[in-house]
Length: 377
Image (cartoon, rainbow, N blue to C red; front, side, top):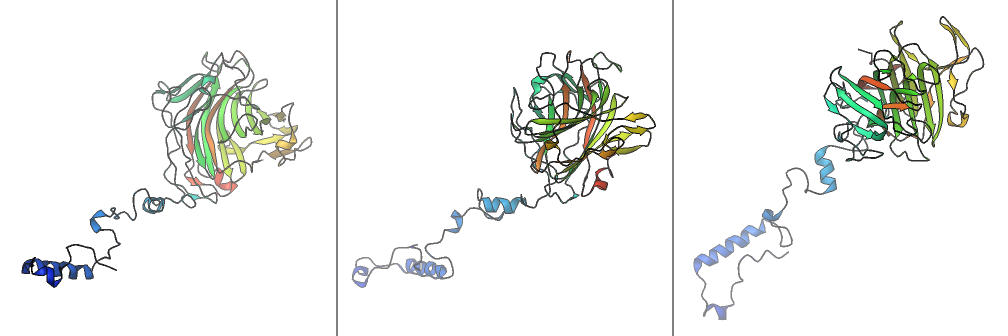
C-alpha cells in the first residue's frame, strides 16, 4: 500500500538545484514517512475521523445497538416498553410494547411493571398514563383514586351494544403481556346508586380481559372472566370468543364482590375465584345438576353456544362437573391483559370498582404455580 501523502515528494536532482530543500524539512519528511510504516495504510480511515466505538459499535448500526443494549428479542425475558398503547374506538394514543415473560417455559420474571393498586388520582378517560384504553366511549366515567383508592368504571347510558359479546365491546384498560402469567383482581359490581344495590339491567358486570392484540371486527379473539348481574341474578361469567363468536358459562353467587384470577400456561388458560370459607382459590367449573351443600348447581350456557368454539371441553351429563380450562392456540404470545366492564341491558346502571390488579412475580410453569403465590389482600 502507498503511504498517505503527508508531504510533497522530494524533487529530482535537476529540480533540487533551483529549489533546494532545507535540512529540517527533509528530516521532518523522513520522520513522518517512518511513522507511517507502523500505522495504517492509505485506504484506512484516519483515526480522528472514526466514529466513537467505545460502546462496541457505530451509532445507528443495528448489530451494534443490539450488542450494547443487551436486549435479545429471542431470549430476553424482561419487560417491554411501558408507555400507553393505541386506543381502540373513538380515541388513540402512542404504541406500547409487551411486558412480562417472553419465555413461555416459565421462570422468574423481571421487575413487575404491570401491577396497579389504583390509589392515584386520575381521570382515566383522559388520554395518557400507563394503561391502553379500549373503547372508552362505552364508559361514562373511569376514575382512579379518591376517596376509596379504587378504579371506578361506570357505563355510558348512551352507549349501544355495550358488552363484550361476539363483535360487541365494553370499555377496558389493558397492557400487553407476553408469555405465561398469573393475574388477579379484587372488585365489587353494584348500581351507581350506592350500597349493595344490584344493577337493573342484565349482563352488567366487571372483571378481567385477555384479548388478541390483532383482534378486529369479524376476527375478535378474547376471553373475559367477570362478576356482576348476569342473566337473572348475581354470578360469575366466563366467556370465550373465537372469530367473533362467543360461548359463555354462568355460575351463580350471592355476593357482589369477588376475587378473580386468570392463569396462562402456553395455549392453556385456567380460571379461579376465591372461596372465602375455605380461604383458597377454587377452579371455575362447569356443573350439570351437581348436588352441593348450598343446593343443586347448574352452569348456564348461552342459547348460541357452539361446541366448535370450545372443542377442548367435554361437557358432562347430569351429576357431572369439570373444570373450565380453555385451550386457545390461536392467541399470540403477546396479548392484551387488563380490566373490563359489561353493560348490555338498560338502563346501564352499573359501577365496577377494582381495588387492584396484580401479576405474580413467578412465571407459572404448571397448574400448581397458578395459585401458589397470589392471594387476596
